[in-house]
Length: 516
Image (cartoon, rainbow, N blue to C red):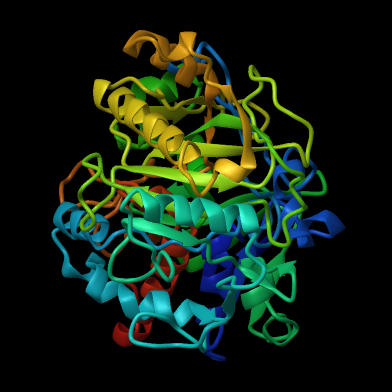
């Protein structure tokens, strides 16, 4: 069977849902949104404090990395959403844009000013509805509610923020202001105590009822069928049958893992990689699937509590503190981050107290320099991919992780947190005795922060997979709009940037009447 529409969007994750809702506002344009999963109905998704415990369920792709030399030969489960709304059903709900210099790098790498912070700010604001109202930096009319906690903030977290102030770090209103270095309660995608996914916010009943919008669920994309320099159709698997969906314009929004894998199954990529997987190469793109990087967090600096820790009223991980390597620097782009979790969060190799009896200070590097890759092993969806993020392979990353751990311990020893600390359980004194000992502890303590990017990076150079307008190089009617195009990771969680990328893309479409 074959079907046709004006615009075909492959993947209903955070970018795909926004594209479908916004592009279908034109009643004269038919839009089809294809999703491998379906509307998520697990009631635990709605509960913000359940986010660490819902990974691996049927709405999670649950990818697994190769064993990582930099993390004590461990493999890491990468949760990725398989449902309308994608990973916004699974993530920790943080809303952090990143530092302005992050986007200056995007503009530099793409040779295009549209990716500066000043250019992106209207698109960030257009997605947001802050609980505190709007101003020159915050939106108040967008679909996504952004809760800036006040009285809900846990008393332990208030002490954490006070501890940083004691050490000379600024207190911030939130992480979306002019400066990012400092401590603040996390702004969260929560409304009335319930997680709000991008599907909840953009694919409302009114939007889904539009006659020009078709949403096809439970239909994974096997490959694109390319003829000449154009995508003729997408081959979709549904109920054991193969369907062909075609469109004048095709947008790939399957994420930093799904998008490059779909292109490789279509015969696009490194000829050697494709040949080994049994796929004929029809378009050489050697950088496809490369440049992969991700945020890690050490879990961690674990404490036994001196008093009972009541349950979080939010989502357990309530505050982030962004800092420079130089502890006296209070402006500019941060190098490290320390977070406070109102629960004993621990990597699998570390023991931890029971819930209510301890807490964890997470620590990490904001701009890792290690780079990995991913690729297919065969032509079918059932052929498992190889995902190698190459964690902690640069001395810069290892050095900054040591700095981040030491900084976490410094606030753990602050006067503000003293009433909460009975014992520092990890790291031990032996693990603090040398850089080598610190590295060994960090290797077994780090976990993914679930922010993979750059596998279809945008850039102004010919090796980049997409150009500054997110058009796929070498094909006339394919664009990629998702986290895979991010050329360098932002300082914090990437979700706010993914939403802004999608909104920016639509606005540029509407201005020109066509995609460039």
